[in-house]
Length: 114
Picture 1 (cartoon, rainbow, N blue to C red):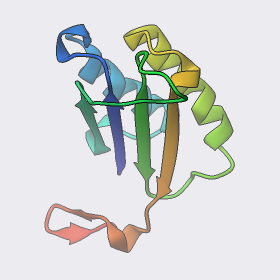
Picture 2: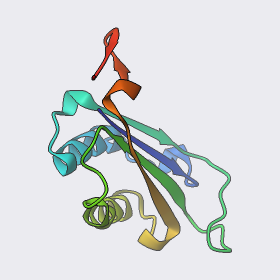
Picture 3: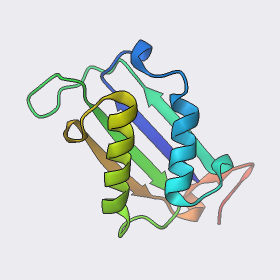
Picture 4: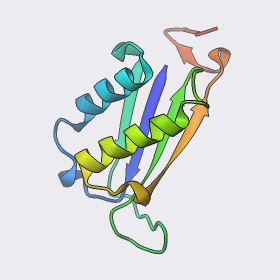
């Protein structure tokens, strides 16, 4: 299970039409997981203020069952590069929060991953 949530101050019209499928493939490859376990959610038009400025900014969350922690520094670099290239939001204009979810805390298809 991978859930990639991206809150951004930029308007919906500035989100490329292929951003969702590209994000899904990107995060699946980053984590080495099948894409059918990936959910991507983009929330545009957010009223946000980061670092004393209202320049384009965001807030990112990555939830995964296991394998976070040691890899977060590498993930941060790659996610930063991806979002800066695709959305034009500078890497110093968003934070990434990682959530390592226990198997029994994630439901899917009428059961959990435990």
